[in-house]
Amino acid sequence: MKLLENKVALITGGSRGIGKGIVEVFAAHGAHVAFTYNSSAEAANAMAQELSKDGVKVKAYQSDAAKFDQAETLVAQVLEDFGSVDVLINNAGITKDNLLMRISEEDFDRVIEVNLKSVFNMTKAVQRSMLKQRHGSIINMSSIVGVQGNAGQTNYAASKAGIIGFSKSVALELGSRNIRCNVIAPGFIETEMTQKLDEATVQSWRDGIPLKRGGTPEDIANTCLYLASDLSAYVTGQVLHVDGGMYT
Image (cartoon, rainbow, N blue to C red):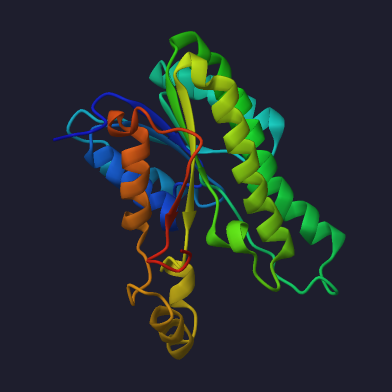
């Protein structure tokens, strides 16, 4: 059973890691997918071509969601290419970790801009078309760090906590038009980035998780699938923790 048959999804940061996992799962469930990438055009376009089969359209767009004008242009282009946007997933994000005493103003501002302002930019850009069609699902990627904080990540924690407050407010504003807005708070997810870390360190993290393993991009993608589909038609304003029991 394909849960997203003929729905159109727009996913930021979709060319690697969690974002790539979401694009793949959505395409497998019949969604037409537009996704953004930052720099690697060749890899992103190859991925789009590979997933464009069985009547599913997948297209990559180079766009910086942290820039208001680029977000507006992107959404206008996606609407032209696909006809609608039924699902928006704000997944793009960066880290610039440091202790508060060492963090620069530039690194604080950049993380807030990419992680939090991008969510405002993209949500505002799709809002008009979702209001017109009187339905939509907006899914914003926060983090366990946005819920409980983490030493050395004041900028990242602030950006991810901000996403939660923003999303709850959007859920209240747009609920009467059948537009839902929810948050996913991943825990330790194993991606290309974590493969570069020392194995003993990674194993110690796994050992501290009740389910005794790191999460996969597919674990997050399957939660997005639920929130994007009609299975969650009565769910809005919620934060779903996908963390193997790290936060209870």
